[in-house]
Image (cartoon, rainbow, N blue to C red):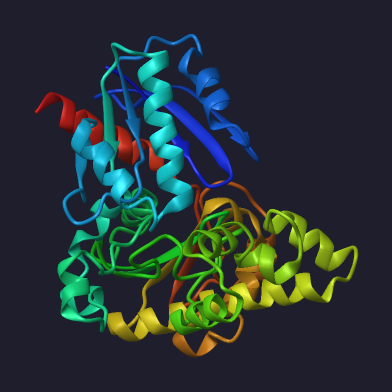
Length: 362
């Protein structure tokens, strides 16, 4: 069975065609800085390899859709219901569903929700201190990037012999961190929506909700207007003044142009990652490994160094030469470091292919 897995991120579209159950990758590619997702989907839908199913890495379907499902009216309705919570991501996947139904009308669609891996987060880490009615209506921590964090957990276990107490740092245009104990998610930075947690390229991270109410009341802004501001003009873009919030552009502005705003954006982001590593070490009762992945986490040596600077007290020692050099999955920690630090390529598509195959053949 050949499964096409389009990974539609907030700024990119990666895809693989994977033959299951052999897990053979038949084709793969990536389109960056995507503007028109319908056009991009049209390109990959007819890439030349026979496709038996399409598996979507869906984002937010609320409490009833934290698993893998054949796309039907219920899945579409859930994506629409939580569109306000994940305006960028759910809109992309609603567009993708329509585009694939048009391009490949006889091919089944599967939605593998990012929230599935985080179903193991304990209740005390999942609940917010909001009125009971809010919780009853689904306001709780869901967590996202589940396919990436699951792959990293499995990859670390394969490389080190056990997952142990791991912090997975998925850092890219969309970023989150996950505390993992023996392969199970026990906490994560994203909460009710992918807007929360670390700063993302154009989306704000953690924010005092009363700041939102203050600005709305002061300026008479609508909820829709504020949502657009925070989803498209916040995060690293809002901090740095660099349109699009791509860290590569921000690092260039910080180095070449000496932009103080760009330098500050990097410092804010690195501090948030460092703070969460410390918090998760406390929550897990220790730390055995840290894995950096995603476009930023895997490829930016300077960002990894900034995130870990000052964490020597928890047993982290970085080898500067290892951190700066090399490609592929590799350790960047020094020999003798109590905590193993790795730079890894993630493979969300493989996790989605496995979930989709199980859904289709059961």
